[in-house]
Amino acid sequence: MIQLPSSLLPIIKTLLDKGLRPVVVGGFVRDAILGLPSKDIDIELFGIKDLEALETLLAPFGKVNVVGKSFGVVKLQLDAIEVDFSIPRTEQKVAQGHKGFDVILDGSLSFKKAASRRDFTFNAMGYDLSSKELLDPFNGQKDLRERRLAFVDAETFVEDPLRLYRAVQFAARFDLQPTEALITLARKMVAEKMLEELPKERVFEEFKKLLLKSRRPSQGFRVLDIFGMLPYFPELLALQGVPQDPIYHPEGDVWTHTLMVVDVMSRLHSDDKEENLYLSLAALCHDLGKSNTTKKIDGRIRAIGHENTGVPLTEYFLERLSDEKALVEKILPLVKHHLKPMQFYKQGAKAAAIRRLANQVNISELVLLAKADYLGRTTLEARSGEFEAGVWLIQRAKELSVMQKPLPALLQGRDLVRAGLTPSKQFKVILDAAYEAQMDALFSTKEEALLWLKQYINEVY
Ligand code: ATP
Ligand code: MG
Image (cartoon, rainbow, N blue to C red; front, top):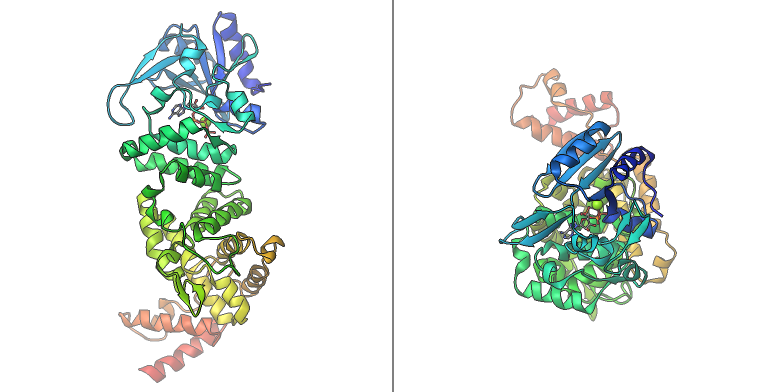
């Protein structure tokens, strides 16, 4: 059932020969049962005496690194793979905060006892490499089969509130429904403000898994809502109940639409994880502005200017989620311009407008966002899976060589110096005017650009 990389086998054999009981634990077992690829391997070693003994045993096989002394974890680097070996342990919360745990390492623990510190039943399974059997003391396999998200133990679960965010992403990744008991417990933890002690980086890591590793992140956002965690994300909460014109959005309110768009975006992901992340966050934020612009005008529901009011809302939302400034900078222009592909297509926008758009945002990424927005609905057109406006804009942007980046400026400061001008603040004004002229196609070669410059200087100065 469990397929370990062949480079690990001699190590396992040595451990077994020494009478120890290595058990593969955690995500690797879960993923194997689900038939999913998994790269992190965690092995708990029953029967081991202490950390030193563990280190000594592993040292002949590769680079050994004690990562969590108090947690009894030793990392072994084997060519490209990294395996965490650990001593069975129990954990008990003794103080506030994510790190306030008292850890007891004990190689003689039973598997069930050691597994009881884990969060969810499907993460508390083990594969015993000596008996070659699945150890499943909390019925994780059954829960996976029946699509249930259940905690191992209510009393210990509350000791680490990050588990609620883990629940959110696991629900989305493995298409699971939280049990009533988990929902009740989660709401209680939220009501007791336990989530407020969490460092934002840890929460963001779970958001990343939610957006990058699941086919339908919407499931996680629904769990976030069911658990009562949405008030921590007021910009998202504000989308609930905001109506939309049923002709364009038969699916319902802005929240419903947003979740559909996030799901479509997951299907549009490439191999570029960084890009996937900001595209999915842009999908999540693209209509935040509808919460403060939606009005009935002449009997129809409109959200005029939402792409602009959505920009500061997106900024507030993202700043609370992450300190990664570069990420935010990628997302804001996508939100601001998300309507452009459709508008440009309908208007038959001119080359100059497309060049100017490329100056503000990466067109190929913008088209992905607009496509997700278009398909993330229940309209008839959305069912076709085609986004004609995007096909058109991509074609035009390619013809104009501005698909991935803006037009490079033909005139630079040094050209102005060569034309006899002395560097000054005025340079920026001239270069901006030159770039505008270039986007309007008043010139398209360096020679023409220099002629234009001559004329410009004569006229203006
Ligand atoms: P992923 O595929 O996201 O890496 P994973 O289950 O491997 O999923 P890790 O965060 O790598 O998750 O943790 C490995 C194992 O350690 C988990 O399967 C779980 O049993 C246990 N674990 C990790 N974090 C927690 C936690 N906060 N509370 C309880 N158990 C945890
Ligand atoms: Mg893992």
